[in-house]
Each structure stands twice: as structure tokens, then as C-alpha cells.
Amino acid sequence: MPAQDTLTVAVRVKPGASRERVGGRFDGPHGPALVIAVHAPAVDGRATEAARRALAGALGVRPAAVSLRTGAASRDKLFLVERPAPEVSEVLRRLRDGSTT
Image (tube, rainbow, N blue to C red):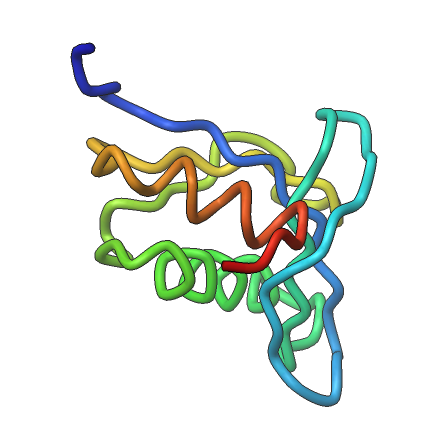
């Protein structure tokens, strides 16, 4: 099976959280979304940037490999992960759907 060039990740951002957290599911406008709570406020793109970095860390990829596709001014966003390793899809599924190993 050939590796994907990009992986699209639907995310629901919760800005202004008391602690940062990646995990959980939110059924939003882009389908099942990964919930990312960030400490940064929803001002000047700070929450989006914090969510981008948190997503990269949770998936084990470089922050530069994650970019925003849509949703700059929304809590519901689509991020693109460039050249994800095959296991990234499984890590994403576990974070979003909560299955434990």
C-alpha cells in the first residue's frame, strides 16, 4: 500500500483551557474531529498555532509538517499533515476515539 502524501485531520479547538490536552471526539461540520484543548486564547491566531503544535506533538511529527487548511477563524478546523508515517492514522484514531492499548 503506498504511503499517503497528506493526511487531513478534523480538529475541534477549545481555547483558553486550564491545561493543554489532545484527545476526545467531537462530531462537527467536518465529521468526527479530534478535540484539542489549548491554554492560548482565541486571539490573533494564537489558539490555532497552539493547536497546530499540539497536534504535531501528539502525532509524533515535526510541527513544520502540520499546516492549517481551513478554519482560521473557527473552532472547527482542518489541518494537513505532510507525508505522515503509516502509524500516524492509527495514533489519530486512538486519540480521537479513545481506544486504549
